[in-house]
Length: 181
Image 1: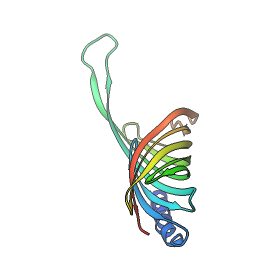
Image 2: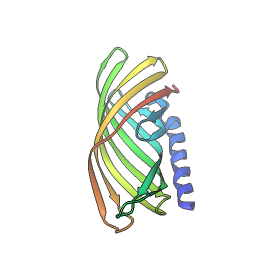
Image 3: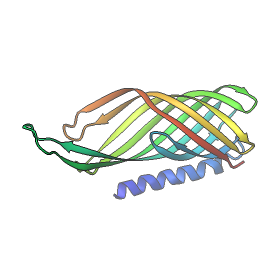
Image 4: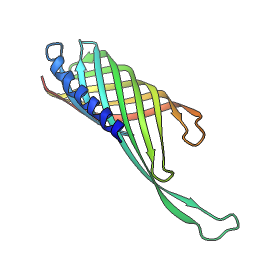
């Protein structure tokens, strides 16, 4: 528990200091996203091409797990829930800009901590995603974005200690950016 508190404290300080350090370099904003996970982070436009986006994410999943006897009869169901706490650092490269619309591509390094309450196990997952998206400035200080990602993740299986690699579409997200300068 102490390790989680230290990790989230460090990330909060990081997200708080990025806008202060970058006031002169370019536009800085706070972003909120929803998709397969809910996230909050900072958006830092280093120059006209490069955008850095550190982010903290969270996801809660609840599913029923049912078991049925082999010979037939009534089965039983129990609830399964898990929490995912994650961090990511995205590097986005603006590809084109037309009026208020900007197309971009890039990548994101991610790390997630997964807790399963049904099985009482914790594990981790790390990965790399390729991001493709569009950002539209609705107002001078408000932008909307939508993106899709393809990627690779590696997860440590808690039961066996082996690693499981996953490839494919990682997430599709929509979000809003509020620029502070």
